[in-house]
Length: 290
Image 1 (cartoon, rainbow, N blue to C red):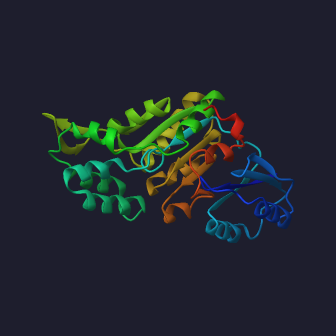
Image 2 (cartoon, one colour; image 1 turned 30 degrees about the vertical axis):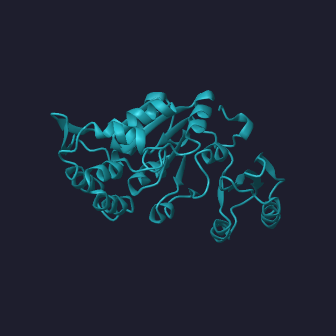
Image 3 (cartoon, rainbow, N blue to C red; image 1 turned 180 degrees about the vertical axis):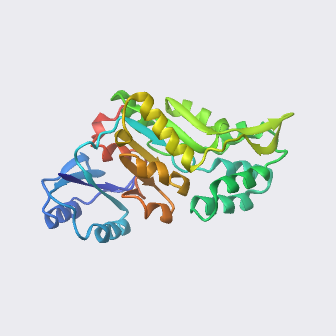
């Protein structure tokens, strides 16, 4: 059995007629509203041949469509990227802006997240441009420039309330993941470490560098420790370095992802916020912990 889920963009209303017409065209079961005007699903007997054509049409209406197997959709663990996923910024770009090299670093970040550049090499190059930046700038960036992605608190609190585990794995820096993990309620976090001496960044990052393969390794290590399998995980990210964990997890969600990344993922959320990951698992709005 399959489930088709329709999600509206925040602040917009999902048209019941649109949902009913799609259900009827695909021979689905009765509509089940997980949140009135926001999220609705229905059962399907088989994968629709025109799935991606319909998906593309719905994108024009700012509606996300997710089709998945019904069995096993509720997950026991969340594995999340940080930059442009749990927060709305790229931390290294914000540090670079403070160092006066914002545009140069942002362009390298864009190309790396699109998979055009080797992640490790791109990170080393960008960190090098931060050399001699006052270490105290990190605290200022956290307080003045970093904002959480909407829905993150609800996602983590609800999964934890239902026995789930939440891990933050980032190709960014521990100086940021520590703060974000504590603020949002993650059980643990992993990231790279910026090196500093005499109160200034050295332009170096500690080795080994946490990149694509390290995120996959984290998934394997944490699930083994918890006594669960990768299929019990819902992972979320937006960049090329997330593709390994997104492909390995039972449900891999490309959230507001780069097109080259989204194209390689079965579950794509371009308009919803992080609460979309709860609806994908079948949670109703009244079940949200906060």
